[in-house]
Length: 90
Image (tube, rainbow, N blue to C red):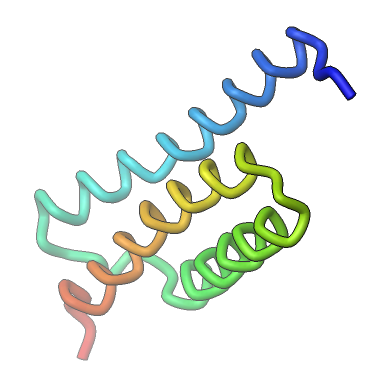
């Protein structure tokens, strides 16, 4: 089944926006070396969700789903890793 060009444009935009949405948080944490304002529970759930999306993409053999969600998983995983590393609360 052919995918309409407008669907490709919308899907690509959605993937790029989703992936880049983590960049400001990553840069802020890295610059300030402080992740105390980041919710640990939120990012644990986010990482788990993207992991499930990757698994789903593999199961249905949908490479755009796999690729975009691996990128989101890496970005949200970076936030989670920095949360554990830089969290100022003890």
